[in-house]
Image (cartoon, rainbow, N blue to C red):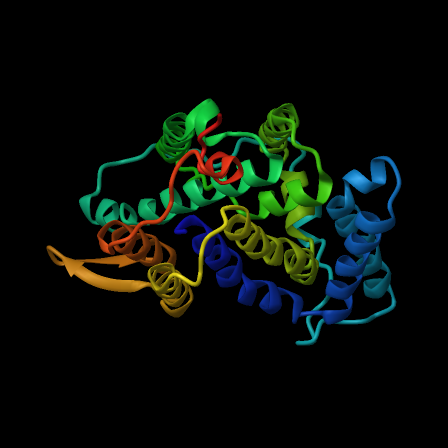
Length: 310
């Protein structure tokens, strides 16, 4: 009831960034999009598993050809810029900086944790629904949330960015049908190794934003589609006005507060993102409105989506 519309919001709130990225070069974005669709629908064997990688590789090759032919982006800028790659080292340390205590920075960043927690819960239920595994129960939300928090704290300790569960990855799971956590662990090892190869970072950084936009078209839309699927599988009754009200408030909050809501606490501006507002509103409404009609034990599929396995 609450997670479904939030997952829909996660996807739809990302939609404008997909269009913005793609609009820098529609032809490239279209090549990426069409390649992914072709490999996903008609691909055979290994190629069916890696449509997104194929989309990136083929559109990057197209970008190289277009660049060589003297074509430019919509704003007249060069499609590819290799200057950074040439000057980057093959081996180097990422920029490590030790964290220091700053109450202003803490007050600004702490409320964002609400949004990442909600996104985490939404993504966990979306991944559970996609893979048909009760991840909310095993390993359990308490473990995945602690893992997420510890990883973010560790990253922040050395000046790295925060972690987030990335709804896009749910879209990747749906497209590739590869659900084995071993794959992600292997990817993590690759990512750590690549972190020490600045040249590789520059190669990835040189990828035109239009390609990212073309890929995002599918991934972001899939997140919202998974949210709809979540609602359908849970047999949420929308003839019940209580459920309609909760979904309506979540959708308007999640999509309406595009730049969040900023208020001042002890002289420090604090911003709650649209997703955090939507999640808080949904949870509060679900708790106080009379007539919560969900009964555990009557719909095993729905229970599994909530992390209860029979």
